[in-house]
Length: 237
Image 1: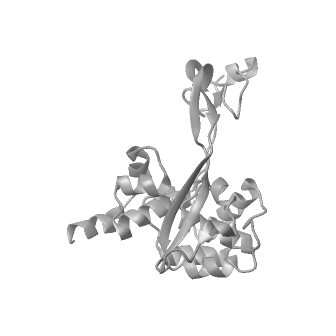
Image 2: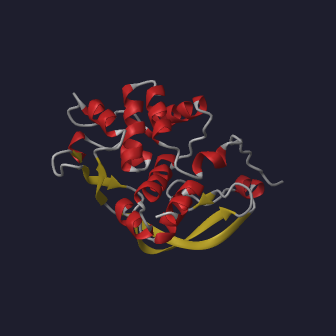
Image 3: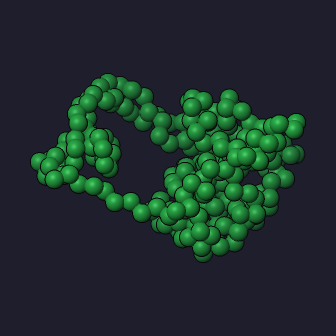
């Protein structure tokens, strides 16, 4: 018997991620936040384009409002999921249905007999890695509509912006999305920021890789969806 993982994503998934949602939509998201910390997560998550796990590590000191008269400079924001290859190791994956993997950080053990029965598993040779510390420094304009909201949300904060974990924070973001009939995947803020940078500022792939500290243009191309309005803008410049 082969186990088939069921998924139930809303029908509006593609519409939610294919192009920049607009500043008004982001402001509505912030207004629908149930707590101050969730509102901070919406605002800081988009402005920095960070993964949720990176955004949750932000401190007040990361935001420099005095360095440049027109820009907020985010200094040394942590970047996660940076690894160095140190060798090879045996790994396993379900090749058809759920794409589950074994021999990884999340599932370090090999598949047990029951899992081998339920999944269509293939063995392969993968890389063994170790985590690296990485940080990114980047600007965004003070004139952006969410910046005054960010400044207000930073008032009275001594150090850490958040004291909630990933699971709880993402659950609250999902609830906001439901109210707006938008499914919000894990990297939604990241994809939206990349699309906005491409549409409104004309960022090319090399600009995006530097701003996000991505390692290749393929990642920038995947995230930066201009949509038809962005493509049309390029035609009339």
